[in-house]
Length: 309
Image (cartoon, rainbow, N blue to C red; front, top):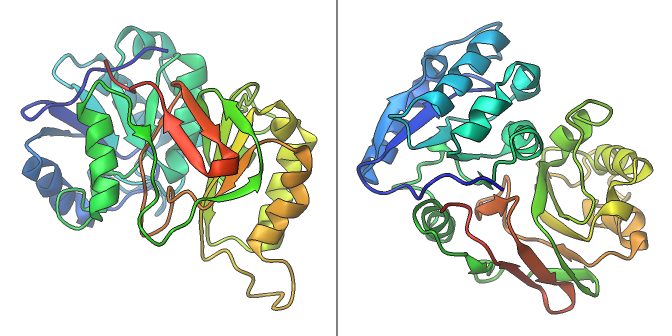
């Protein structure tokens, strides 16, 4: 996989809004990155609103992302936020240019679509983790900030990912597996099914997380992935945080963990539950596309390769 360089104090981070807008958080986001010692090149999309829920037309957002990769003054790229809209720009990206100008790309949630496309079309290793709007210098929890900054700034593997104290990493299926981590937000992984950007899980560690989804909706999306062979193809399964995903409609029905036991566990792939990555209080950064291994039996996940070089 192609990799960007480590981001050091004084380097320039390009901040873009490839999905939804939130202009009011821009000053704080800039201050947070500057407090860490970085210079910031702010994309115009960060201050745009289009149709209420988009940070500009798809063509603008794609052009800006292409330009950030092509710009020699930009050392790395961080998304302002997620929301909705990144799948719209996938056909408009210049994957050849991106591959020729590898840079660390950071985001999560709706940014899952971009992680998938950049990994599969440009061969770029990316970082699933907190974005510019997360208060990364001052209000992000220390555990998440430590993993994020180590992944961004050090050309060394993160090593074992250890959950914060009090959050157990639970084994759902025993066994060991290895391969690059792929995936992200379940809703986005499901949305790309049947498109040219469908996630390839063959021989990979499939990471999934989500927020504000009823268990029956999680069931629907997992069933779609199951029918498409995504679990049978995967080497192992990593389940992150599932914030506010307990049922409000069926009080005595399945919880989200029950759904995983019903749909994912029968595939017999090494599976861990409750990695503190995703839409929770904690959001541990996970490098995508680089070597990783897991011992599900002992609840161990190890990142064996850096995401920058």
